[in-house]
Image (tube, rainbow, N blue to C red; front, top):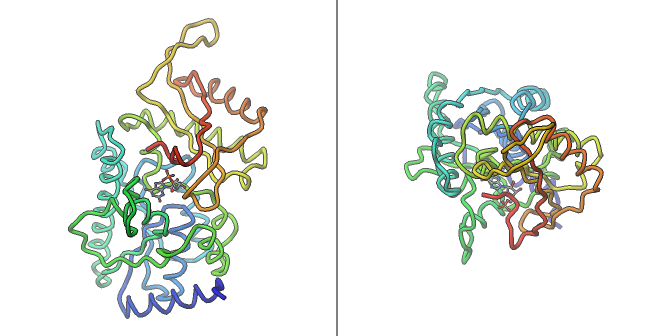
Length: 321
Ligand code: XMP
């Protein structure tokens, strides 16, 4: 019987063996995977782990504060926050191709971790980089035997060739539900363990078109409204996640107040899933959809249309890019 506590024991032993008396950096994204990976490594090597939270400017509203507050409170881990917004937005300027965006984001993450490693040099060498890579991330990035590259998950296919770190990836054989159980076993609170997935490349792959600060702000507002309404309708555990996608290069004509508008659509992509390898579109109650749509078009001036994605995976993927 493959129990959760045996997974924890085995991974802790493996991490101890791999890292020896070395030091490790772990990128925390605010999501479940990196939180659980960090907690496992912390159990294995204690304060020789330092977590790094990268604010890449592609975060949702409130994300940074959530990590700085909740995760540190739950684990007592040392956390360094890096403001890398200019760096990421500069590197992404004008880029529209989804794979190119993913590779740029993956590379810039590593560059930030390398800088953090240099900043921590006085304390010794941080040779290891912990990542919360899951089995589905590996498969979808073309890492499994005989699998096609569907998209390069930022922590797999997006890694630069000249990576200086040795990777520690204790979740590489696990699915999300197992990761959640491991997190619970390690004592992480529900608010972290039951969080809906959010991709490392963040809102950067939810803007269809080039990414810039203004577009990010539009999407951030629309996303915050959708999340707020889904939470107050008690649907957080019913849905796997609900990406909100900004079709930044599409415009349509609307009428708001007594004036003509020429604004952007946002797409709601609510999905139900067991492991993100396949998914079904969630039949959200119409009154919830209506509240989200009304609020977004009233409160986000640049958006004049809200559309619903009713595609399963396959043939669609969950994220649009
Ligand atoms: P797709 O779009 O491939 O998404 O159906 C499957 C699940 O993975 C998340 N996702 C990512 N997570 N880095 C991540 O950490 C990534 O690059 C990435 N791309 C997609 C997505 O949100 C969904 O839960």
